[in-house]
Amino acid sequence: TLNSQRSVENITTKTVMPKKSATPGEGIVGSFVVKGYQRGYRWSDVEVVRLLDDVTGILDAEGNASGTYWLQPIVVKKMADDVFELIDGQQRLTTLYLIINYIHKHPAGSTPSPAFRISYETRPGSEEYLDTLDPERKDEYIDFWFIHRAAETIRNWFESKESEMLLEMKRLLTKNVK
Image (cartoon, rainbow, N blue to C red; front, side, top):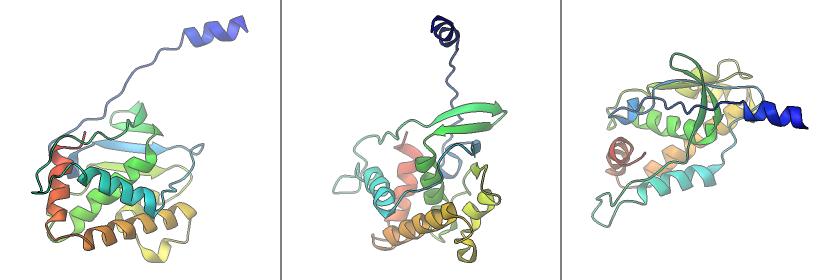
């Protein structure tokens, strides 16, 4: 109707870009909230491995980055200072969080913990679970099961690579992933 067209015309959009810094552990800063209307984390091994392989796919035969890897956009709505509603991209952002956290916790990684947080509005304790990945809790929610599975896939992926891959991924996330 004409009235609904007018109201759509009056909507103002604004792009909110979370801060980006120089280390993978501090790459994206802020707290991201996944609202209840969103589906939960559901990436399978295939999508997790695809992201890891895509990021490292910019390495040439000598291990030098041959360009930039561009992540798909992550759409957010600012709720408060450094607090964002995560509208699109929660699968990628959660997986990126798991990768950074794996590097952080690995003895060879020596990076700070991720400088961003993710919580699922309908999953109490989800923010804590992302940090601990407690296998005793993986069956509490289907999201926890998928998150735990993704973390295991990340660990298996790194373990199947040369030992230098952990440091290569750290370097790529710092300098070549945008």
